[in-house]
Image 1: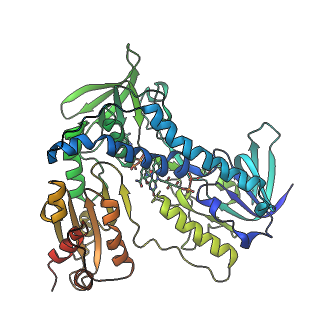
Image 2: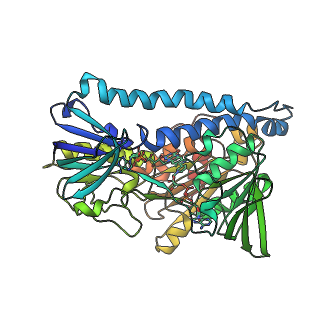
Length: 465
Ligand SMILES: Cc1cc2nc3c(=O)[nH]c(=O)nc-3n(C[C@H](O)[C@H](O)[C@H](O)COP(=O)(O)OP(=O)(O)OC[C@H]3O[C@@H](n4cnc5c(N)ncnc54)[C@H](O)[C@@H]3O)c2cc1C
Ligand SMILES: NC(=O)c1ccc[n+]([C@@H]2O[C@H](COP(=O)([O-])OP(=O)(O)OC[C@H]3O[C@@H](n4cnc5c(N)ncnc54)[C@H](O)[C@@H]3O)[C@@H](O)[C@H]2O)c1
């Protein structure tokens, strides 16, 4: 039975741990799927490449508002798809070959197959090439096995043809009509992508708003705008799924107006993800999990078992790539310097939803501040009130800030509108480095008439002394 200094399970953010400092560690990497993990292959990177393409396809709608008449001649779906994956697939394969063949990785063994703990610090890998399973032991493990999409418990759903974010980007033809079940990140981004390409999109939401976890004003505005572009069904319970005679799929719904059905040629299920801790059977090595399936880790990304660390989606409720990457750097340091461990910094974790409009957020929402009894003042600034917003004729976007009335430190920042994911960055910086709103607004120049004046004005609008 081979014994290693270190075994890493998962090649998403787990793959970036090994660098020249580990050159003389006897190491194994275990990967059951495609090298590079979710973000590279089926997550952040391809979705944003589709979103950018969708933004270009949506230009006629934006142009008309400005007096520029454009016409979308068509979207060459297969060309778009093949361009995107023609770029991504070789990166995944290059990463695999680097680990398997490059001299930098002379001490690294790659096991391609599904790992499962079968004892204390003992992992058995079912090899994908059909050879007999191999059992490995190690002094240290890094659990970086991510998560997977879940299917909700809806009668018939598992038996009707359906897609998840893992498969929908590789379809051969655009459908005429798409039904999306779910109303979070994946639903918001793919609705924009496919609607911009001419697909008629229906979104089925369990609650009364899309992107319900966002600040209430942002979620409300996003839902209003989405309802102008898509058929949005709110407050619906999905009671069944079935095939339709024309080869499509129908969802049977119960809602405020009673029973109804929605039909599409393609069904996308976007109802969240769960960690892969169960399939990895982390309990067999003594690692504990929360009811959600997330592996329990301390501030140093250590599990309850000495020498076993976890990072990214398998242990983090944030389920974001920048968090997985940050935690990977923390684990890397702590493997190398176990006597001087560093802690992960989860104080101000931002996120963005790359839909149209974009949404970006960091820190407390107003509803969280209220629930937690945190004293706050708030202010908003519309894009329509800044010069660049006039240039864009934007009438729906805004920034909303929450600040501590005593110190002027920002508690939360939320932006909905063009380039929200970029505009939020100085606010993340201010929060991370404890820069108060007044100093931030008046202690620097803001280029006129650029879009960050949205942030400057939102800061100045805060009712602070
Ligand atoms: C559609 C979509 C879009 C997204 N967009 C964004 C975005 O714009 N920005 C952002 O910050 N985040 C985004 N995310 C989230 C982001 O992709 C994840 O947070 C991130 O990839 C998690 O990294 P990880 O290393 O923890 O796991 P992963 O990247 O999922 O890597 C885990 C790896 O482990 C392997 N594995 C699992 N179990 C086993 C096993 N038992 N044995 C062997 N190997 C195993 C898997 O095959 C996989 O390769 C998106 C996610 C999705 C689904
Ligand atoms: N831009 C980004 O950073 C980005 C983009 C895509 C995905 N992601 C990550 O991937 C993860 C998964 O995304 P997601 O959109 O699948 O999850 P999500 O948690 O954002 O949204 C899930 C949605 O499904 C709904 N839902 C759950 N069960 C349901 C049911 N039975 N019927 C109807 N609706 C139901 C929820 O109410 C919620 O609206 C996210 O947590 C996110 O962190 C990030």
